[in-house]
Image (cartoon, rainbow, N blue to C red; front, side, top):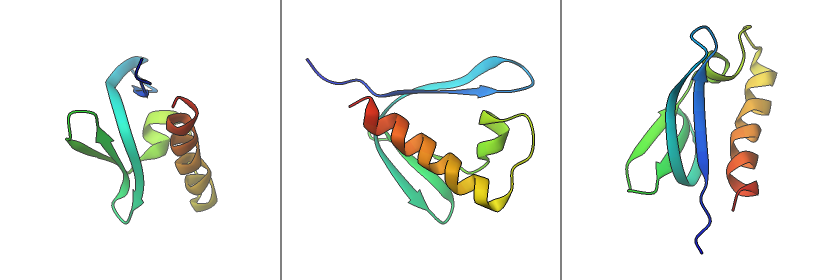
Length: 77
């Protein structure tokens, strides 16, 4: 049985899923978090607060949010 790592990005104002993705790899790049999908395509998430929190976040909180994404994927493996 293969492990499935799935991330759901939800827009806080619409309260609807923006994207549901099966992720095989997460990298922190200068453009944001690069999520490599199982089909080989990549997406970059660079506005973490827009998808995770309704309020704005400081620079320190962005590092914490990056770790949340990375932990989420690694814990699901």
